[in-house]
Length: 116
Figure 1 (cartoon, rainbow, N blue to C red):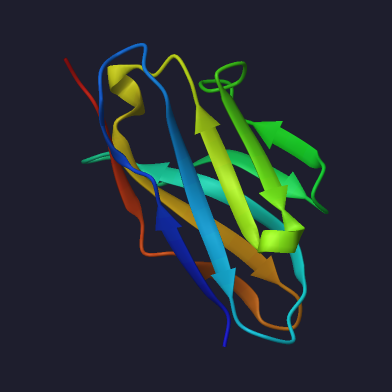
Figure 2 (tube, one colour):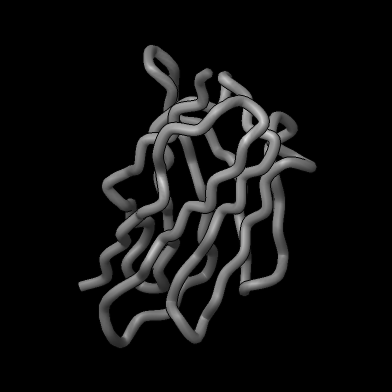
């Protein structure tokens, strides 16, 4: 069984930074791609960033230039470095992995609040 566990959320002031982590546990699995999504109150879940094969990345227009997605295969961990945070970045952030022969799996989510 493959599981994802996010960490690193919290309260930060506008203009501040946070780094989210997504740890992958399990055995005998292969991941095609991973990504970060977020869901703000009253809104649909939206894609924030994706990483394929560890080095091909893409970002939503709202975070491009401020957020960086990365993956450390040796540690089975994916990261989201978030800089220049804005109040509109406030949301629950979820990590997602597309696991070969299993399909998409999700973490439990971590709250990010940007407020003064």
